[in-house]
Image (cartoon, rainbow, N blue to C red; front, side, top):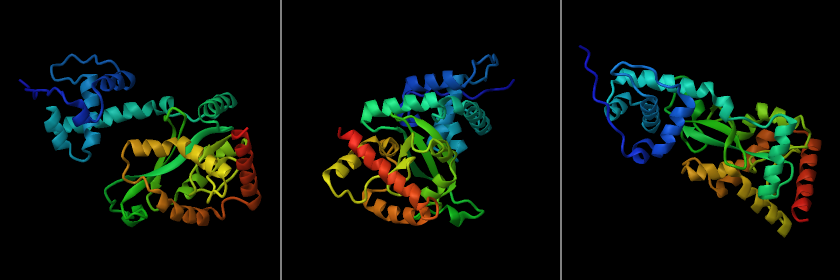
Amino acid sequence: MKVYPKRRRIDNCKQLLRIENDSIDFLASQFLPENIETRGGALSSRQKMEILLRYFGDPGFQSGVAEDMGVHRSTVTKTVNYVMDCITARADEWIHFPATPVEMNEAKILWRRSFQMPTVIGALDCTHVEINKPILHGDEYINRKGYDTINVQATCNTAEQFTSISAEWLGSVHDASIWRTSPIRGIVSQNDGAVCLLADSGYGISPWLITPFQPPRNGLRRHFNLIQAREHLLHNVAKHLNDVFDFNNEENEQKAVEGAIVDEQQETRATKARGIQKRNEMIQLINE
């Protein structure tokens, strides 16, 4: 007779899984099908989600996760792969960038209502996620802080919800280079200034990507930068999550220089001039 290990009940969800108890039930109900397995050792949908969350908190150590959850190490591996496949299969339902005229108009209304900024439909930024150094081309993953990372570009909306994710870039690749080849850039640029994103000074300004004044030389420009900083929600998400790669303002000056060098060949002078003009128009609308 096959003997199954005793399943362990997770009582300290916040500490062990980094998420509230009710949220685990919500995730299981949203991403995993109803459990119809009747065998004695079958895992419930809730238990499968718990295994994934525990693995996220301690990646690479299946034995430790198996001990915490009361399952075999092979079960951890199979369950993690299964749950991740279920989640990624529905990614487009949860992470969706406003791409149609109706969606863009709705996003503009929310940004104007919440933060005063006209024509804005999202905030753009990159953050570094630490990884173990790969054997192949490992040095290319080292970022300017000396860590091995991937550089993840994301956009978010007024509710601090991600609307796009690009997680395939090496840590050594600059934010502006990622933006240059981003499908999101294609979506907003084809509207030729009718909609735009907010970004930090590491990017080049254009009619579809508005950056702060560097430096702000009067009260209106300082007010604009203050509003944009408050609206730059992705930056706030990184701070909320205690992102250790959330670089401080002093380093942003160097980032801006690097970004200007990378961006020099990306946009024409006319495009940059139109971006500056659009930013000035936005100031007038904000202060009306």
